[in-house]
Length: 192
Image 1: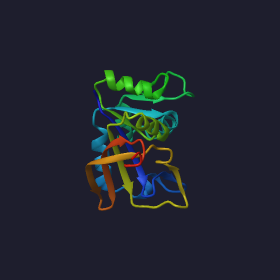
Image 2: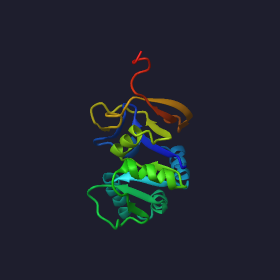
Image 3: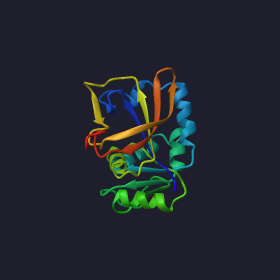
Image 4: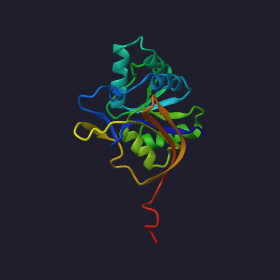
């Protein structure tokens, strides 16, 4: 059964983006960008929602020769949406049918390729709540976006214990933290 990894980039205060800030909060360095290139070349199936699909396929249309985007184009992608209609125009993309949790459960049951989310905060939240996530990877950028931060990632999540599997520092400032998540019924000891 293939693993499912939720893969997120965040500010230190847990935001996925910030108004007026560039991508990666303008803090990406050569070591991190090299790692992204290596990591994107790994064989997996990407899972995303409609908003992420529209954003990423738009980037591909604007920058078709970008090596990172070309690698993402080559990856099989399953898009969960109630608003998009097929066929999807971004190469190697298909619409996931019906309920995303049920569809991903089936992909894990019958598939052979590892699964990985791209963006898609609501999808990540629902997959984690359903205890389908095997690995939870967060890349933390050293910035607090208290005034401009948008898309608070962890709002609405269940309580989750995280067992550290890997950690790494890129360019002396960006932290990669990879965990095995365990969805909890509540705080430890609360039911005693």
